[in-house]
Length: 457
Image: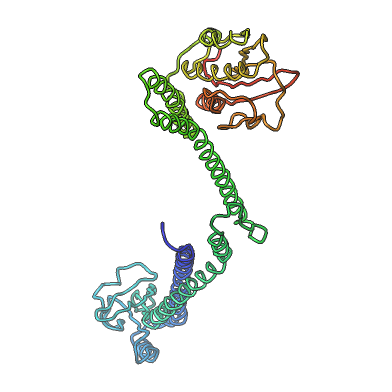
């Protein structure tokens, strides 16, 4: 639902006020109506209590004439109250026919309602049977009370109640909107503060101390997002700088060699050597681009899909056999310890282990032993490569798996290595739900990664 929060809150205030006010108004009106009906019943019962004993005493026609005069005097001019005496003997009848034309002499005693044609409000009736006395037969005595004044009171009360309820609802809406605006003032201040953050300054954060408790969590989360964005921008800037640096070298070589070749005439052999050199530089650039595309896919949440049940010892042996020529150059010996079967992407495993072995071979002491350890840790398989070499400062260990990061920039570098090998290891571990780790202790440098598998055994 779009729109102002203050308006939405005011609308909710209005709905709450409508429900509460309407319920209260209905209850009040019902209570008043019941009270008015009780008053009408009480008045009818009072008149009966006064006249019933008199009617019971008048048993002769002569005395009944006195009763007629008495009933005439008790009937008001506006006929708000009317009396009827129904009897089989016409001498003892009074009040004429009933206005609704109903023979009420056959009805049971008690209260009743009589609708009168042309009159909006009905007449309340109370009927009682008077036993026979002397020569007088049994009588049916009915007192009628016009409900118009009572209903007029109820109508006026209803109109007042509707007007009061409408004004109360309108006031609740206005007050609700004002309260909402006032209550949301910290939100507006927070929004203004966020909008006033200067562009280009990634270290700026929102002030959270003066905010209400409900908004502090939001501000802290926003500051966390700013911090993550700052880290992402720093990483992106570093990445762009590193990529530009890594690609600039082969591009410079290509341009320089080509310019030199164009200055003088070259024979076919020299041009072939030049093209071969240029091809090596182009292959290096292609490797950088392919590795960057692979890392981008891994960081976007891509998971390993080509899974198969393999023996890590067998797969590690294949990788060592493939890299044997590079290991023999420094007279390095590789020992594989441990084994287990896991469900992983075989191609990615070979790639990550090959990168670790390349890294170990580059920095291992000549004629030393490189150890590949395959260890089970719960539902994870840990693969590590250890070599004897110069110790690595602990400040560098947590950064060694970052792109293009080198603990010692002065170390000799081969053009075949462009600083993405360990980053690819971390990406492979992430694609298998694992992690990477690095240790440097007791003259051994250990780099490794873990693989999560639901079929580890």
